[in-house]
Amino acid sequence: MSTASPTSLFDLTGKVAVVTGGSRGIGLMMARGLLQAGAKVYISSRKADACAEAEKELAPFGVVSAIPADLSTEDECRRLAAEVAEREPGGVHILVNNAGATWGAPLEEFPESAWDKVLDLNLKAPFFLTRSFLPQLEATASADDPARVINVGSIDGLHVPGMQTYSYSSSKAALHHLTRVLARELGPKAITVNAVAPGPFESKMMAATLEAFGDAIAGMSPLKRIGRPDDMAGVAVYLASRAGSYVTGAVIPVDGGIATTV
Image (cartoon, rainbow, N blue to C red; front, side):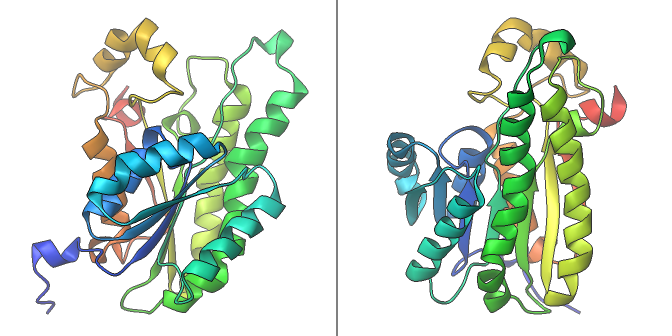
């Protein structure tokens, strides 16, 4: 029988984590949670100034470094992995694939570029990042303490969204399935792969929607509120810690029950 204390089950001291899209929104919330649990965290974002600002905001919580990267291309995914490898020769314990984009337009006007942009970042990037970081994840993985990949999906990939975000919802549903595919393939390497499907949280991506429909969206949840930063920080720490070491191939809604009860 394990003698791990509840506190030690969630302790990430000594772990190295990479969070893409970590300069704002869901990624920033997850990065903060991992830092508070003891991990050393690298965040990445396309804009250098956003990286610098987020690094400053997160610094009070732990050891954090920002590396700008445009992860819509495989070359940049490889470069990010190589730069982290130079700084962390011992490997990476946790990879959070969070960088993403959305696009909304009527069916008759929805452009091809919206499919290319959204799928490149939301679906292809998590695949290429996981592959690029695989040697670093394998370096830290063990049967008792697997390395972790956490993909950030969406409840829009679990149910039909009310908005005309065709490429976004499709990309997130595909990411959920890619999570299961990679979980089966990487499990024998002692790497877990799970997805989080956030509902409405305060973020730049959701700002306009929440301003216009925030009360109605909160009312859809059995809990009658939108997500808070601690809600997302908590699920990231759970999946990254000893507490979540026997969970793989899961897609966990963090949405106050919207996707599963409405």
